[in-house]
Image (cartoon, rainbow, N blue to C red; front, side, top):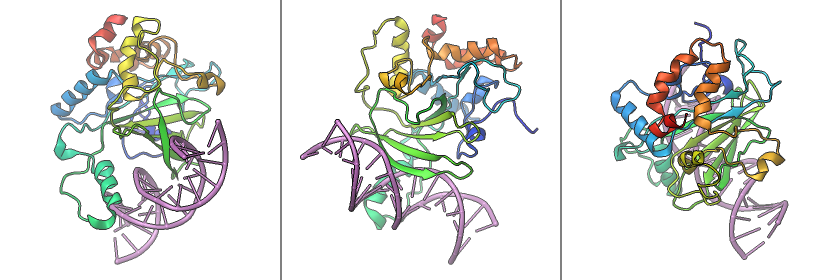
Length: 276
DNA sequence: CGCCTTTGACCCGCGC
DNA sequence: GCGCGGGTCAAAGGCG
């Protein structure tokens, strides 16, 4: 009852308005905070198909402690990702982001909200062991705000994609329980290719499958110089998604993980699975 | 000069 | 209704 097998990001952060999960030793299905409705599920999978699985990976240094997880073995890769809410339906656009922005712009001209339910854009978070807050991910971001977070001594930073037609946002904050962990939450989808992303055919076919993730704005295998400058160690050299399941499973005695493979198959695009 | 960060103010939703 | 917390705006300043 006390502690679940998995650790929600909110556990790490100390708070959160949505549920995201670390894939520490938790069943993979928890990664996706799917609603119970099949519809949601389908949409989620569709999304996965679009952007490639949001599998992010965090590499801890060997001596690093497992995140907030006493039972966690000393594996060095922890990932977390979760998607939530898809704005498939125009009716359910995120009125927090879209509407709010507009209403803000127009000031109090529209105190009345539409009766549409508030819904966030699709978003997911992942954790990265990093010394720098703002991880390079191939996109250009402009910081537009920073707020202190309750229950955390670390502020949360808000970034927006600088591309005009793209209103992808991301939030960056440090883990409340482990300051060495940076939790990045992406919201929305990029409507454009990465402006500074190298060609997909960098050096292996792996990358091609990683590109969709990049298109979504997630950090990935590609590591700009900054990474090394700042002692970041966000990703492995192998393709992220698969380590996600396998690494964890292989090194974590946690009984729950190994069983997740089945779900992985649901989550991972077929080409991903083939890679292994 | 243009772009970015900083930062205080403001707005909104939610719980009490 | 009020206060709190989260999210955003926008002016000001910094930097290349």
